[in-house]
Amino acid sequence: MPPLTLAHQHLHGVTVIAVTGEMDATNRADLETYLREAQAAPAKRLVFDLSGVPFMDSSGLHVLLKCATDCLKAGGAVHLAAVQPLPARLFEITGVVAHIPVHERVEDAVTAALDSSERSI
Image (cartoon, rainbow, N blue to C red; front, top):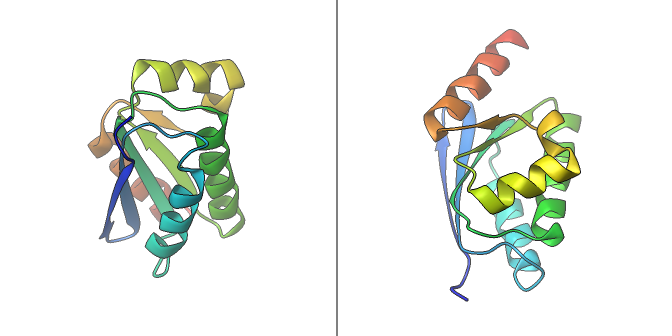
């Protein structure tokens, strides 16, 4: 299995986190650590670019849900983008799609995150 690679970009009002590789129990701690570091100067809105994630188990899902909960408590939100079929099925089965916005493209997710940010001001 290829290693999980993570990158982030701080934009005005939103941080985009690009994830590549499988998100599972073997790299959960790495993902949690990275998210804490990426949010050191956090935007209240996060977009996860999941276009490079072919597989996600409940461990990866748990990290995303915890991150979404933490952002919500801080007055922000998490948006998911470019989700591949297997993770999309996991989100559908677990009902995540009813609680975290999922967008076809990263650009759409960034726009939605910024729009929701402006409405909450």
